[in-house]
Length: 117
Length: 107
Image (cartoon, rainbow over all chains, first blue to last red; front, top):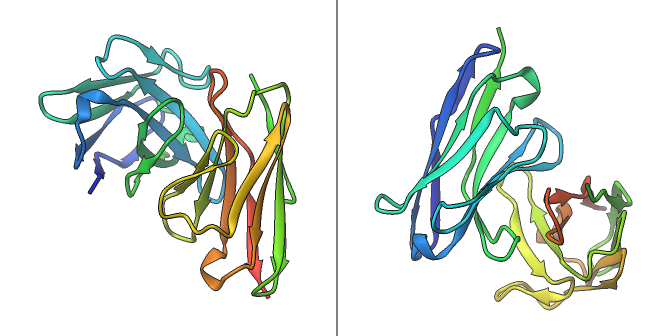
């Protein structure tokens, strides 16, 4: 059974940093691209970042490019999202997702990030 | 960026009804479209890929169609467990983008 478990969320002040982690199990982690997708309270879904299975390439939308960094440790079956210079508009539930061919076929339970002073 | 427009934003249906949700892309996405279902308080669930290919385990009352810029998700014979918000998503190009969602409520 595929499982994705996110940790690291919380309340953070604007301008500060936070790092999310996602531990994967139930599949061969290093065979899959992985992504982060977020959902602001009561809003829709927004793709945040993707990383190739080797970690050699990463992709971001303009809204987070230069502030967020996705990375992975294939030996530990773990995906990360380093979030710097956080803004109030980054407040959302962040989901770790498996990313085969551009779709998001498995989602974690999500972790809440609140950016507020 | 490819903008995805879903309609309607919300709809209400009876058990057993047939409903259709549409998703329009701002440019041709060549059927690189997925559909997701999100129930209240839960993570999204992947239903369908390449516009019409159902994931294993998804009930056959769900179907998808479309091409170019126009796509649709149809539920034929709605069941109580189908009450949810449905999102479309294009993976034709970066950035990956989602539709705004369609909330399906049961009468």
